[in-house]
Amino acid sequence: MVTGIVVGSVVVGLLAWTVVRHRRPRDTAAGLPPQTRENIPLEIAYTAVPLVIVAVLFALSMGVQRPVTRVSDSPGLRVEATAFQWGWRFAYPGHDVTVLGDSNTPPTLVVPLSVTTRLELESPDVIHSFAVPSFLQKHDVIPGTLEEIDITPTRAGRYAGYCAEFCGLDHARMTFEVEVMTQPDFDRWLAERRQAEDDGGDDSSRGPDGSTDASGQARGAVPTGPRVAVG
Ligand SMILES: [Cu+2]
Image (tube, rainbow, N blue to C red; front, side, top):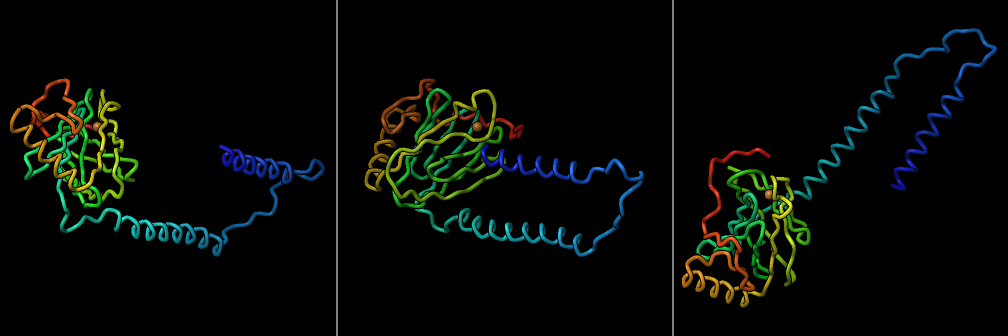
């Protein structure tokens, strides 16, 4: 705001100065002032300088983007994170554990501390975006495309996440939580969770705190209709 006012004032001030300073004096005969044509060195300079700026910014961006988006060859854990209208499902392949939420009951993605977890982001309907601000992570979830990101949390705790791509009516309610716990706690949670799912069958939407999906949606109830991206 302040910067905008300063820049705006400078621009308007220069415009006003030019208009006043270079107006035609009353007592001179009508006619054009001396006309100049091209200025090759100047034109080369104002073409080359922006090109150099863009090239430098591109190189710096690539230098940062590559390590940020690099995925590990051997992640410690894999989680299938499915975004759908309007909720999230986190499945732990090989462990028979699935956490399912919807727009009424945000699910919790549980991951171990200091372990690289590979998130496989998929969407059966429209484009969503997996965003956890505390992790500095925001990644589009695109139908028909498997997007992969790695997260390696360094502090235990609970973190807020949400869909960051407008995806329809209940987009704003498409939230979730990430809970980071130590590996022993995580192993215990995983075992209890699997046991509960084995016992209860339709227990897929129970969060780590024992909360239950209000809609009672069963595991695998994520819509898997035609893969159509409509934004
Ligand atoms: Cu969404």
